[in-house]
Length: 451
Image (cartoon, rainbow, N blue to C red; front, side, top):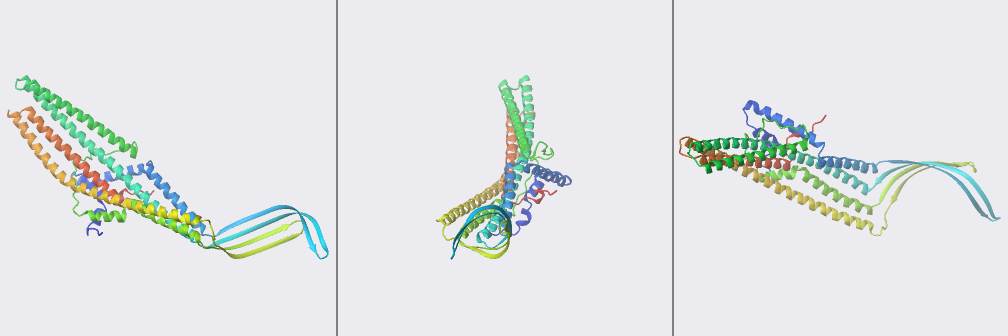
């Protein structure tokens, strides 16, 4: 499936572009704040790598795979062994000749030392083991990359949640301020005999509701900051100047679903790891089947021996080729191959399942992005209309045309509009992060730093 002609250039920096469009202060400040966000996220990611169990497990798996590769290669190399034997012998020897039979008792001590060198010439099983270890190491490397991307996605979402919680808290404070002002105005009207106690009671209830919403927003911010701390440590921080409230996400007209799926097929490390594990399972089958093949080794040995009674020293040098052919194993090799065949089918099925899940994931994320862009535009227009309505209602109240209840309802409509826009911005941010992780198109700015 081909990519959109202009897909690769903008998409390789999706997340960096998002951080640039996430904040829209004056142009002179934009680059500096974006760099600050990238720097802090990189530092938090580095800290999270040291404590995240999934990432550390992936790194350990890669190290184990590398050692497995080293072991597999070593089997095909030259091996040298040394042996030494020291013994005491007490034996009876019988000699038969024409003259008769003689029987002699002999006791002696003997010593022998030998050095043997062996070089495999043809070992199909071990050759397949090297290929398999290579595939497993590459799969483990891809698994580390996948764990790193997933960790970044989780950390970035923790950041986004902090930003959203801050905006929500600010909205809640504004709502409390407005509700307090309306309740104060209602009290004045009651004292002047222009309103009833029932109307005042309703405004008091609304003010209390706004205070409750404020408490909920504070709790949400606290939880979001705790989650970020869990990932990046106690020193993790999100600058106060960064908020989602000022964000205007940039639409992505150059991306398309087919192109995104193509990027996932080509670059997603989780999928690449699964396919390499599938290849390793296939090589495991071939390795076990190779047990039917002969083994050919070149060997050479040097030995020296002596015994103390016969006053005898013997040196021996041998060079040769050793061929071993399995003849009968009671069906063990056949059963082993059949087991590997089943494991290979399992790996293939898992690879297919991961590919299907990732295609669905990227399609869902892209659909959420498209939907959020439209909803954000509508939410912006709704906020503008709600602000105008609230302002008109407030002027009407001053002119005696509207009531405090009308103003409270207008303010509630404005509050709901702002909360809805914030929810849509959070939805957009989450979809963007998911899409960036799934397609493995995270900016190199967040890659592991070398020391």
